[in-house]
Length: 408
Image (cartoon, rainbow, N blue to C red):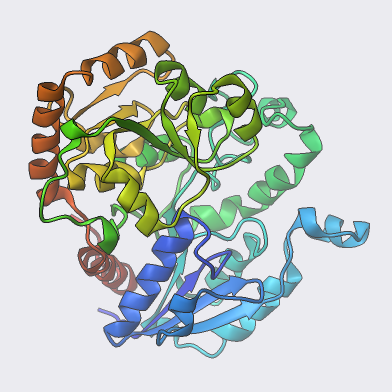
């Protein structure tokens, strides 16, 4: 058995609450620090969120930029194989730590930090864990999705056919640096001590393309305190069908509005103006805070998650169900495992728009919605992943990896 766990280094591209990965990484860091662990949050940029500022977490920021932000052609070429700024900063940090008592937990690192930070940690002998928030460890676009064809990609990632196929809706040169970075990272990814998967859907799809020598663990994301309810929201009295999503083609918001032309859309993105021009009766309200989304869910008849691509999880699914809001979700959503068809919501084939329309029609009946809502609220009590429970399970993973104990 090894030394006890004392220090945790959490690596994330941003120290701001800009997305789901950052929210999970920051909440983990803060909760771990309250339990007496020495937690270091390593990130790029020059700012951090207020939550980290007021916590016991030690934040280390490096002024690192991505390939796409560089103006120097020479620097761009160098960044095709690594990022010397982030790697040097990370090496200086890790050289001060005890290998036998420390876990390095990577959340995101592919752009501004580069996969080089993963190689640095492994070269120095640290145990490394990757949290799989997306498919960036196997797919240059991080989505396993072909934007041009509008469906999940069937090509082998990093193959010549993958490299030569324009799948992003932009020129191939925007894919090239990501492709190159992944090729250089393959050995470091193989040598990971563990992967943390956020859903069975993500795990199965990722492992069909990625081989590692380490262990695999399943750990769902925490729900957030603002979404926990002690009283069921009476969804049957609400009228609004709600989507919370970035407005890109692969998110399927156009499918949602085709089925519900008067629906409410929380989010923003490149498809906003196109959608506004096509759906005049829809309500677009932009991005909202977690607390504001929680309040909007209280007014929803159902939450719809119409993703055409492979969503690794979809935290708003369990957030809605925990309030008693039925969910209609694409089969490509990782959190679909929480939906029991015709019991607390419905799943549907994202390639079949008629199926979505028919499902929406079923929720026109108040008694049907009431039954779904009641079941959603009651069933979710067992599946809610609180931040405390999430970190309890995370610490168990850390200790198994650090001491070399394999999961049964």
